[in-house]
Image (cartoon, rainbow, N blue to C red; front, side, top):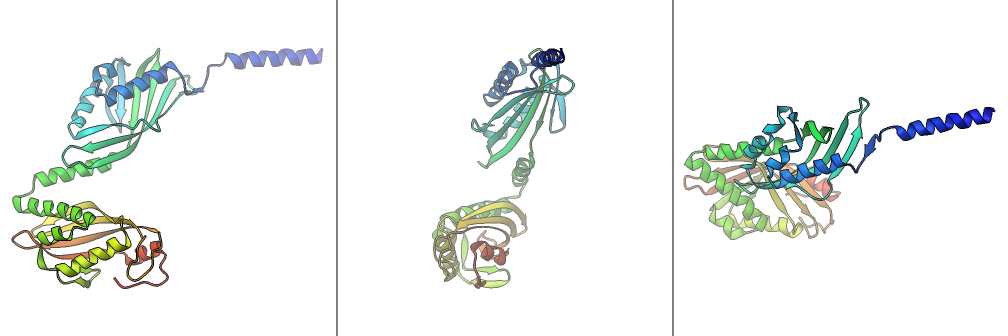
Length: 305
């Protein structure tokens, strides 16, 4: 009799468990709806996008609150900044969960990519979206991402647009200079600088003319054939430009008399460029952490540079 009672209890518990709603899934009509929302965003089909929301639905994007019916206007205001934007098709993740209050939520994780229309700068950022569903409609949703890099880039574009003629000329020369460096185009460097171009690195004179400056460029590209300079920020005051930059490369060639280590380097630094009245570069005062670079390369002794 005891065994029979245990069997009955087990059957009741099993049946109860079977009747419980599913708490987690990666396949549901709600997920398919949210996939359609993402696709409508990518294709700018905003009329279709809002059709998946309840009339009273509320949206919160990075604490910006709005009625969900206003999502199209929110996106359109941002779309004008980009020549292209949308979610990468690879790596998208969807899940549906039933929380402790019985509410149905669909979560999305994806990678958003965009290109600024003004300067062609590209961005990649992770995005998390979550939406609550009732009867197949979204009744509230939230979006989380870090827009700081995009905001800073847009502020820089606005600052450039507000520059005077001379400041804008220096800014364009700095942008050109980064391109020149990344191509190791020494003839182009001569065209935007004076013959007695000076470079000081951490207070030490390393070049006193265009030929020596070119030899210094060659030394970097010999040691790092994939050498690249990334401009991070530019400030212009009178005839000077203060820039922050990042340099990357793989040491597959001889550098400063040392054999290749096949190690990668990634260092940050800043340069103060001085220009003459003709807009030609006269002097660069560069500052960066030599020791970090040499440690990244695995050098036992610190060479002079």
